[in-house]
Length: 146
Image 1 (cartoon, one colour):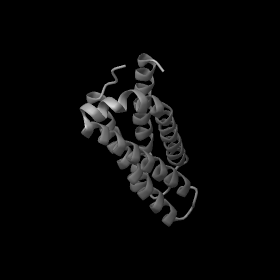
Image 2 (cartoon, helix red, strand yellow):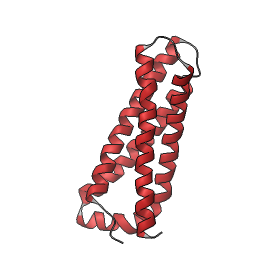
Image 3 (cartoon, one colour):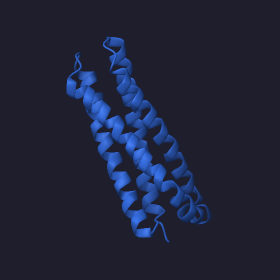
């Protein structure tokens, strides 16, 4: 993969992640403020979790190029940035798992299911926001040089 294609896909990956976080924020806020679950609340949780999963898959597709072309230089020149990237990847996995769990929990009709969904979606959103922050830092400090 050329450097230009990698850079384009990397940026698209980041923008999709931010959009997914924006979608996930809606059910986090609405489940806390409202007693009843709206159709859009459920759909925004499902869309947000799905888009977050798509973002994770896009990152997974970029990973072989990163590992072969970017990571060796980061490990040599900026090992702390390389470690932040690895932390970002783990947080992203947790964000996806929690968001999917929250979206699935919303299929339950009870107040306990909604409460569980809120916690899962909130924790998924927090992990996703930390992932985004680490991603911005890594992209800013560890620009590919190939």
